[in-house]
Length: 473
Ligand code: XMP
Image (cartoon, rainbow, N blue to C red; front, side, top):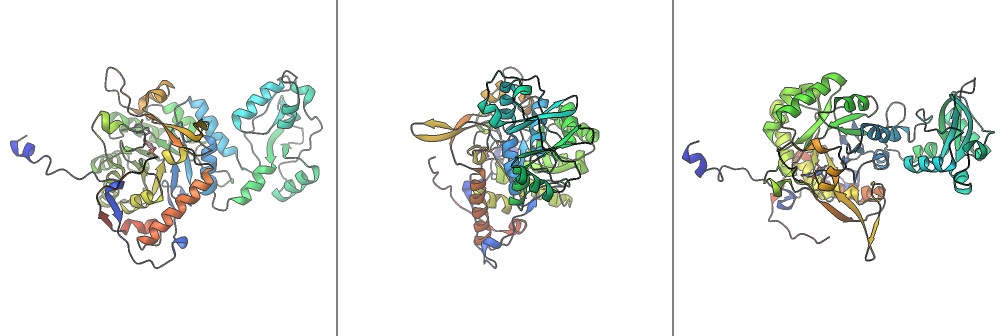
């Protein structure tokens, strides 16, 4: 190092601008904002109807949130702060929801108790269980039976034995007609020999028609993504054929060990993965050169999340807008098309999302915003007449104590430092309503910027503006 490089270090540095320091420069609107096209890409293979993703955090995305996101045309990334089996179960629950004939059905044995049935139903958010013995359907038990019967009663003694069934050749319309005629909510599918083959539920068939922009696979099942560690090949392999997109979830992806472990996962599963988090041009260039076609998307932003304290305790970080612009610039430099850039961390509304699009993001990931909704995994807390939900960083002490996510953060030797905090967020109700609000804000922002779509927002101009006063929450 020569002395000049010390003297000029600060003056040569780049500005780490973020949401509070810029505004969209207004432009002439040629369409009404309501007509703006907000479809975009989540990964190489997945197109979203709305540009929103729920973050893989244990206070944000489990199956309920992922189902709600996919119904609206966004996507949820199931968190990994749990065992591989639990994560797989959550992914499967999303794939089960709304398929016409559910194949991977949760069942119960006739010698179990009503209490067992209650616990299984609660855990999986389901309202009835086919009773199966040696692969054959012998009865059905619903939440009504469970509610009215003695918890210690045997399933065999309280189940409905005379079950209305269908063969798997039944059409959707015929199944609905049969369930209406018989006044039943669940229609088990059985083979000629009485073998249990699947389940049709009235609710799923009806809900399916309600969400026109839902994200579905070729079999009509909702799409879901799952977070994995780069160092857990077994979990990645188990999830790769069930989840629609894997996302490598570490705090600092630009790390030699992380990148080579990710390469191994990509080679083993034979599918591209979303990588992150990254914060710089160099990080993106390295990831692209090492992993090439294996990169399905880039998750950008380091230390800017609502619950992040990485930039406080380490004084390192890449604010989300800066990080996004680095990724978009690097991809442009490489001439790479079709690798989506995901902005992640610190966004509170559709306006923040619109700024991220202007700096090169294709889609945005929210933690804080969705943690506040009914569908997040935590209970509503009543505090002095106000309602809240909990949100916490995956590097917080409490999240690390759950044990499964310690390798999200690099080993700095000695005592593990906390890189996240726990906080309360004001409760906001159903995610459907919150998404409506976000959609309205994004479309209005596109209108002000004089653009017609999320994709076109990359050409929006911005203004430097002094930080605005923060609102107290
Ligand atoms: P928001 O602001 O939407 O941010 O809640 C969610 C994103 O924050 C990241 N994340 C963390 N970052 N320490 C960090 O520095 C943490 O403990 C932590 N937990 C989550 C993550 O990228 C997430 O999507």
